[in-house]
Length: 82
Image (cartoon, rainbow, N blue to C red; front, side):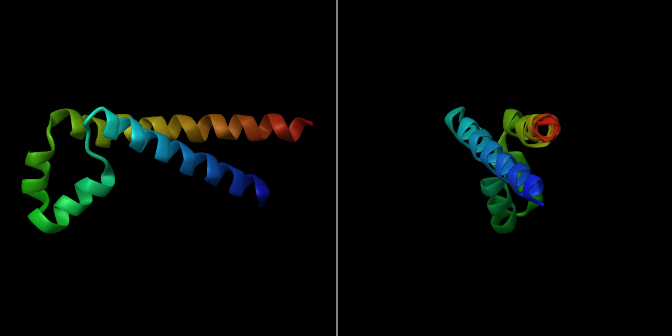
């Protein structure tokens, strides 16, 4: 049970760090993208967000979170050995 909580905290911290990186690079985050979708509509929000932000949102961000989950699983297995 505590291992899932720990992994959840790692995922949350990783997502926050990725959002800070995206903002510092001028890329859109899911928060702003979904907010634009709710006010402008899906098509207008997607057209307005830019190519690199879409690559970030749909490819880089999920891949980075997946890598984070993978390594947090490895870390938990390593901790369980002791």
